[in-house]
Image (cartoon, rainbow, N blue to C red; front, side):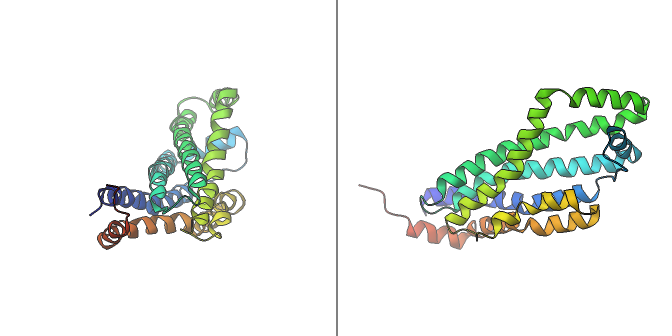
Length: 228
């Protein structure tokens, strides 16, 4: 058996599991995100503090969903069989990993924002929160996380579509979970978002299938013989 084909099987298996599980955790995190009465800082902090346990459950689920995405997307490069779509996919992988790392790191703030209003007066918690979020470097962190974590998944899927791994329909669909979460009622938005994560699950299933022993054996047999 070709050593390269055999070595890629564990990477595909782990990457596939990560991309299948990430949407499930994202769904759980969105579903348990506490509702807030308004978009003010006070409304946001009060909503998190009202149910501390639920807020941290949501934060944990969202954090590990982004961790799984960061761990899973590199394996998508093993689905490519030639140069077609490789540069686009590699760019999407790098930027998606960076964005997922940024987004997972941002979730740390939920531990503080969910606790502050229960320890100090809400007005003091709002003052600390507004002071921290006004820092320009934090704005850069948040913006790069959102842009790379959200907008670069379509770039990754465009590369895979160009290579014939998935259909082009996956590119716009992967953007919809974030639109649904922002525009629909919480429960409805979470359900729609889960359905729209189908492209990520599809890629995960493809990775799992390509890690099967019969597929690895077939790839090894089809690999060109090394030059003498």
